[in-house]
Amino acid sequence: MAATSKPKLSKNLMRMKFMQRGLDAETKKQLEEEEKKIISEEHWYLDLPELKEKESFIIEEQSFMLCEDLLYGRMSFRGFNPEIEKLMVQMNAKHKEEEVEDVTMEADVSDEEMARRYESLVGTIGKKFAKKRDRAQYDEDENGNIKPVKAKKMFLKPQE
Amino acid sequence: TQDPALRGQSGPGSGPRLARTMLGQVVLPGEELLLPESAGPNAEGSAEQMLRLGSIVRPRARVVCGPGLRRCGDRLLVTKCGRLRHKEPGGGGGGGVYWVDSQQKRYVPVKGDHVIGIVTAKSGDLFKVDVGGSEPASLSYLAFEGATKRNRPNVQVGDLIYGQFVVANKDMEPEMVCIDSNGRANGMGVIGQDGLLFKVTLGLIRKLLAPECEIIQEIGKLYPLEIVFGMNGRIWVKARTIQQTLILANVLEACEHMTTEQRKQIFSRLSES
Image 1 (cartoon, rainbow over the protein chains, first blue to last red):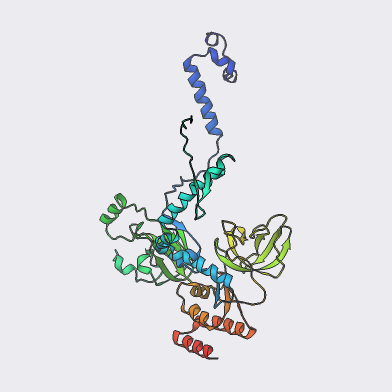
Image 2 (image 1 turned 135 degrees about the vertical axis):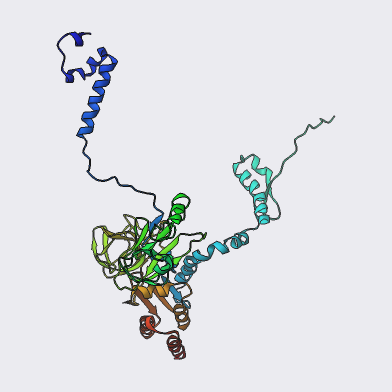
């Protein structure tokens, strides 16, 4: 190669992109290493022992609320401020909620009622999406529930 | 060297002690407490046990160090004097919350605390609120329920605010809001007209707010009234008449250092009149 026989080209020139095409593997590696060394020398670092940050299982928390399960700070008694009294029940119930929760869940809406509601809901929503022409097919029964009425289509024999 | 069982009883300055042995006892600032989970060679006498600790036990139980304590490596450093308290976690099995039950009058803002503040200035879109800390807290006018840029809340200088800290640390100005994370007021905001505001110690506030506090239950039976407790040691009370309001304030202030009998006596006398 030209570089070996002729007077050497400077390193900086050799490092340029277009000069690297003609280089063989060894000189390439050498150049790369030198470059790395320069970069690492340029890096600053603090002359300190390595900080070992272990995973900590201690969490800092400066609030007493978490420690002592304190109540909500607004209170009203004997109907002085009904709004606050309602709020008190709601905010202070949070502690006890876990135990009571499943009981209240049942009391809300029973499965049977849910099923009954959905039964009529099919008709109500169906009516909404039905065209005007088809709307007559939905009629209301005595409970006000809407149910689709399907007119049976069948072949009618022409009479003589 | 020293029997580990004795360490719990020895006086301060004799090196770190196990937190478990100190429960309910007085701790002083500067003391170090060892957690049983992370106990080093000092706590466990024999090297044999130390080895076992190193190899097997790396507990996943999280320890929360509450007010009055600071994390210091895998130990707890006491920063306030008072009694050491502990609460087991819900699931059990190690960990839990440690804190120091201390008496003080000076309030240091803590994130999440509900406090009573006094609006001292209105500047642009911020209110300055005095909460009794080292510096006034800032409160944005947008941090009220239903407030928009167009629709400003009606807050005047001198109003009392019941709010919550969202930013509170030693390096920054504390910031308050009067809404929760869902944008609901939940009782926060400007506290109504009249009433009486007074200051008590921070310990008394916690005592009164504790669940099943007898004082509050007895007070609630007296006559119709409304109370607001701020974690910064401020109490606002209001009853139907000024006289009743004053009685309330005096009883609340006095009940800190009363025995149960004394208190019962006073309440029975009050309910007669």
